[in-house]
Image (tube, rainbow, N blue to C red; front, side, top):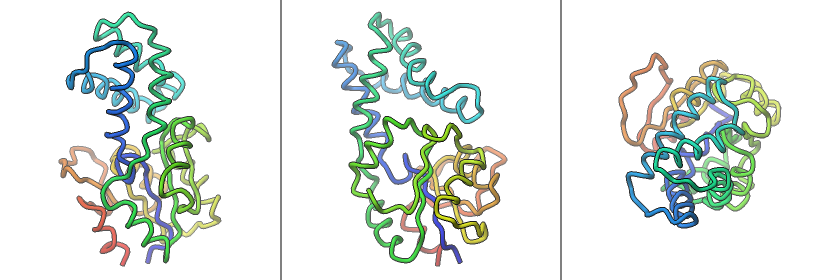
Length: 226
């Protein structure tokens, strides 16, 4: 039976899509850029590719902060100060602490019987305010943010940092729950624990990464841990 449940933050518990959309739209207003849904998609694609590089240790978080806006502004023909755009974006993003449907009730219920950990590949200045202002503040026995420790999922060392914080080391009683195959699932597998892929859009798994479980709704976690 599982005793320590490790959760990813964004796209698993937190509504990152809403936070990201709001932050980008505010940056566009700041710089007089006409709002257009296609521009948000442009940014998201650029950001996604850079974070994939981060998972492979090909770029740092500090580089991501500015590089994504340098590329984005260049691509849409905006001659504004991309570094200022990047700074504004981080401030706006740090204010987005909305949860996905069902996340709050899930964590409140699980807190009664399990140790809970939060493990996120995120920028410290963004994640700390979001977590502090969230209704889930204080619900986790341990939280590790990659920006704080200089290590990111899927590196198993970041899992070790989390488990050391709670002094819990029985891998058979741990499970990693998250939406990313390449960071959450691969990281859990690399660390030697069970994994649960949260896949609400029911995407096809075209990777060699095979999670222990797959769910499309957060409530399905109850069936797995029981």
